[in-house]
Image 1 (cartoon, rainbow, N blue to C red):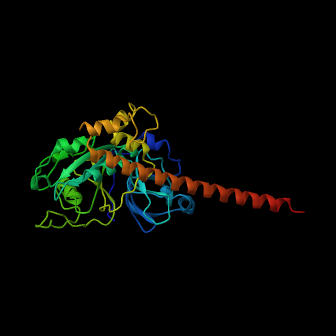
Image 2 (image 1 turned 30 degrees about the horizontal axis):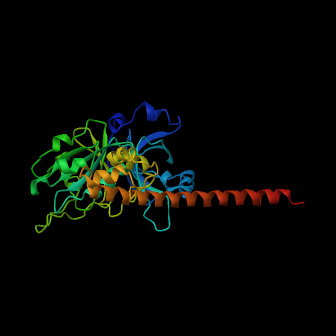
Image 3 (image 1 turned 180 degrees about the vertical axis):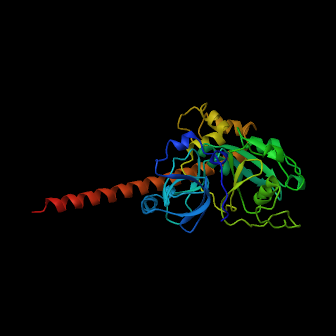
Length: 344
């Protein structure tokens, strides 16, 4: 890698992170993760760093302990530890039978949820990404890309994204891009499906071809997947952005607060139901169902809430079962150890 010096404060480093760093360690920010090692940036330049044995052992118990793009890490020859994260985008793990979460990006202030205007905006997908974004602690912004190819109903999207800013943007014409630019030292991550225009957006913000892209299909306006890894990039105006591959599966993971924020109007209506444990299915005196009947709450919105709530409950049950199994294993090890010491 090129030997270039960096001012870490421009990469987001501050006294808060510094307070967690041991004197013998060197701070670095992770720009890319690949095959058990990381590309990182230090004040002395860019380098490749492997994981220490202690970090590998911690990650064997919980993969969330592994470094991810956007993390600040402590280096002493190897990466010794991940410094405490301020925000983390966590989805359910994609490995079958595994109930651990997977961190997609860390220490971001803004989550750009990228949804293309063509062939059709998927409000359910936006709500799913919003749940992850709100749960992370970062501020979500919904970007409707390819706005030059279709008329965008901003009000409809805003109704599905309470509390979030919604912008129609076009990387081709420049529409809406000023609202996407970041202040120096602030970090954003792009989340969206394959072909949503994330890499094209990065290039438009950078004013250069930093990420590989492909032309959209003429028939339906769909883009084609090009990004194959997550990467932290420094933009010319001083902001930092994490481009990500298209996400086929975005399972919720410990996202109760995020769902509450996404469906805030349903939560408010639920407080008016006759029964405090109302499931909003067929109970008498249900304020949520009454709002649907009166046209105040779209039926699609309630169906989306039900789907994501069921998923969140299922994920929570898997996590609880894993924790119980781990605790039982710990007790078995302790019991065997005690029996060995007590033998004559």
